[in-house]
Image (tube, rainbow over all chains, first blue to last red; front, side, top):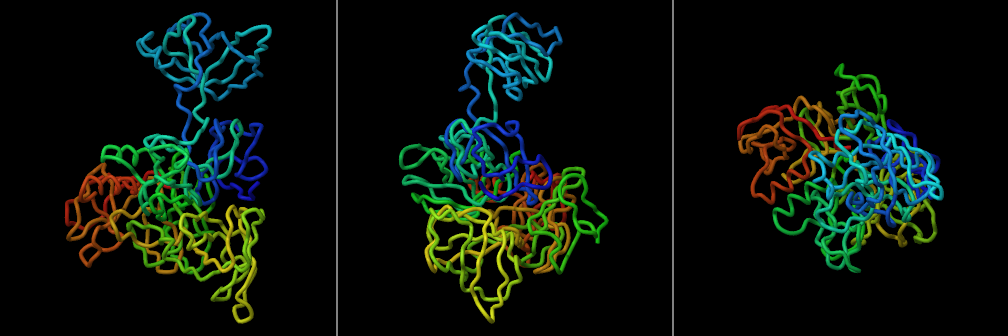
Length: 268
Length: 263
């Protein structure tokens, strides 16, 4: 583990510094800590293996399963933060999903006039799947829309990260070390970044003082997570610049792999 | 000295408030402090004289000397954070360069930067060599005699090209080689803009560095976004400073702005 330590404001990280590859979660997902330089780091779970310098983004909400079902209609006027759900497919310890979010999937939003608000989970029961697939879930806010019986819900966490693999994806941080798939660790989300991995055999040049964006074509010659210079039309450039907070502090030629130093405009 | 004081989270600044022009370093370079409004300020060294309201940027890494040489190859597999270097050109007290960064200078595409944790004292009259301990283990091989950049990302100068990244706004005069705070986030009461050849600053639009630095538009003076759409995209991407009031073209003065968090 690195000896790099966070200090100053924010949470105190667990022993072992910031370069982590925890097989067991040590902090709540999404927790941000900062060092005295104002560089900030977020504790996340890796959905696939992350590597030092890789640009990362959150797993799209639509990619999470929607197997959990509302069990008993909840009316918007009921002013409750408690819902009963069915169709859990595994054992759960109490509060295992605390900090995750529930919402009506977009595909289901036509079922309700104002569907789709995401509500954070405050706590829930344990589930012994061999005896029951149901549980009560308490949310951090009251439900303000009708969730009908048997409606499928998205159960997801915005801090489950994967390598970027399309040029217009939002860059939500830079990995500072290897985090294995299914493990936990910090990504950098603000400040001076010592290493952003860039390039491939089909990559655009990185220009000093310009944004670093995800690779446009992911193949063996341009791996997921690798950054490059901006690509495409003006319209594409606008979106890419809007979606990346990573500004190169040094140049890298086209079609060349390596690391560049960058500044991450505060993302938290 | 200003009576402006930082409080709330973050480090406690040295006595004397935030408007500083320290001839000796009082905090580690790059340290950020914040006030109770979330406005944040970074302690930096001035590479040239900075002035109130100027847009500042870091000295480019390529502008730093590369005189320090690796003395004895270090293999990526060695899992060490200790390197031995040669060719120091001046005396250094122990840990004088703590917080600076080292990275390989010449190998295209291989450039991870490593922060210096500590190092020995060097008496240049006796030896130009020394051990340096980094905050992380080397993850790449450094060959014997490879030239290294030895630099600090918090050495600041006034911006002088429209597409340079704006890394803060000076809040007072800091003489060349002196130390002080620049603002890096929050409400900024004074950004110096304009000149006799400057683009108009538009309320709610980015303030970017000067395009042409002359007697008519000094380095560090902001202006509105310029030129083509493509240039505008780049300028907007690298400036966190958004104007809260307008100034006409070719007019020098100060505007109030909001700095989107930069740290």
